[in-house]
Length: 149
Image 1 (cartoon, rainbow, N blue to C red):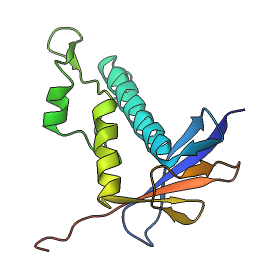
Image 2: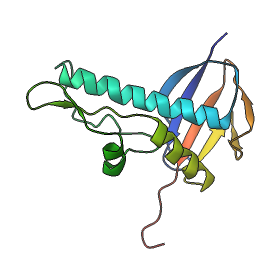
Image 3: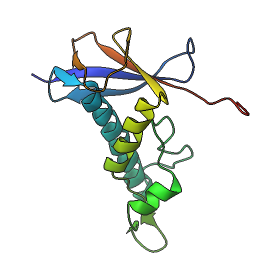
Image 4: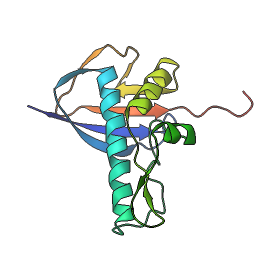
């Protein structure tokens, strides 16, 4: 049976949490590393779906599809993803692949670039096995570095 996990983002401790995803997980037990992978893959899938809808004329993208990502693809990562897929005259499909972003997220976790709070407790080990219950939630708390310090 697959488990569904609510994924929240929080920008600073005590601030309002924002529901980012409801992810259907392939199993009820997984490592923190696998959970981060699922989160990034969900972000990438959301971005790619929004990008396709934007180019199909179904939506207008005022806000970037990558707003709220755990790690944001920068221009270098977009270049590493290869050429954009041409989608008609003067337009292109700016699709993202997840593998490089997963590597960036795992490194960021190791450097305390963000914290993961699973069912009310901080996860510090990527290899820790998490048991997802029907009431489980995970919050990704992203830290914003101070200017000049």
